[in-house]
Image (cartoon, helix red, strand yellow):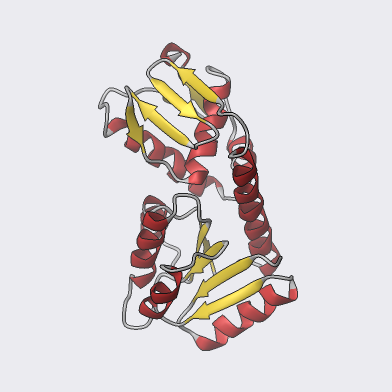
Length: 233
């Protein structure tokens, strides 16, 4: 069965071009020109992946609003922002709302398709993992249920996106060992630039620190990557 992509883009020409390109690659594509029409349909039936522009019609941040609503519906739906807005502030904001990736419209189609493929592959792997006995990783005050994709700190839940979860999983597998940005991308089955990886790590830290202001589980190895603090084991 064809994978279903929902494309939310307010410019008809761009929307049609991307739809044609995705359909040529074998995807089933539903398109929407504004947030209300997209939400009316997607709230009833989620696609396999959503691609959202930030500015939608008369809503300059309608894409952010839609992303937040979709993430509330599903913690695992792959979401990509595809936009002309390339500021760091917009990128970080989009990731904070739960998007898995944030790319600009000047990115090559092949590169975008590679990211789509990676996110869909990751979603399939997670669905298959649900059929197996739960794998639990305990690291001191942190518990990670790999199959249910849940994380807790001092028995308090830490709400992570799919990308954040697998990056954290890569870190905690070998406490004290440095994981490069490339290794974290590989673990999350996605293709990101260095700044986006850094934004994901900052978000993971922030979520733990909301529960424990002294959290020091994730350490930066400057010029190399990140490690899980061995003292937290």
